Length: 142
Length: 142
DNA sequence: CTAATATCTCTAGTGACTAGAGGAGCAAGG
DNA sequence: CCTTGCTCCTCTAGTCACTAGAGATATTAG
Image 1 (cartoon, rainbow over the protein chains, first blue to last red):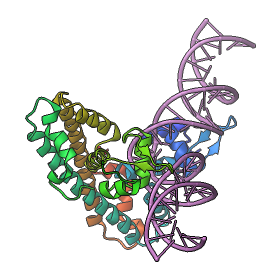
Image 2: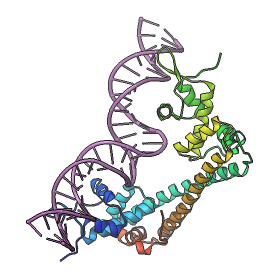
Image 3: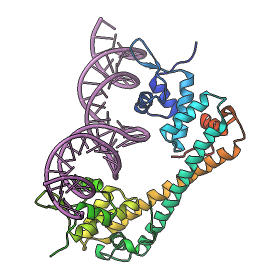
Image 4: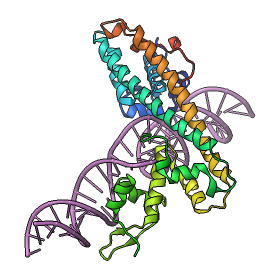
């Protein structure tokens, strides 16, 4: 007899909220589970594993579409590994450029705050910097 | 005679897309402008300044509600500067923690990719790491 | 006068959920 | 057997900050 779990069990085991589990089912990221006589979802051990996989990937910032691809690779063990590597590599690049732009923002915000001596907002460096883009440290933040 | 600008002019001068300008008007971030006889928006120099302020703040990652507060401070020069500093300070903290978690992700992704020797996805370290959360470098990514 | 371009309003879509309404299943205690 | 309280059900709508598109009108250049 295989163990089976309610949606609440799956939620606790995977750390994914119940509403989110239903949402994932709706978009096809989690399988459509069996139902009890009363119409409630019944999950198996495999579903717990898949939910954990998804949660971990989301925590790592992978997008849903990436996860869809990674799940396909997980289920087809003969698929070339480089497909997964490519997804991870692209994601790493996104993260790297995201970090770079956030660091630029941090620098500018820090400068703004350090230079701010005033008591009234008319002297405020934060306001001034925002109002006058030409005094900005960087050309591009985004 | 004050200079006046069409929405297209404002868009070019501010770097904000036309549709976004209308959206900002809708949510009260930009003022409701005068209209020409034919019903087109007419902007003044002040609006250009305000649009630039908004764009710069958005580039720095401030949320719309933050910008609303900062605009209020800009327009009331007697307001205490620390109100603006507080907003910027909070934002800086958000950015710092965002950077920290992205760096954790980067580390884990890098490790995953470096350890990946395989040819088939069943040996893929990327897939394996995602499937087995316990082998994860960090407790928390988020 | 015509053709091209700019602008208008309005609706709906994006991603990844989240919140809430209103109803039904289910287990335990009295 | 009945009630209480929890879990679960579906469905709709809201979040944020836009973006895209349809279909209509205004303005401008030639």
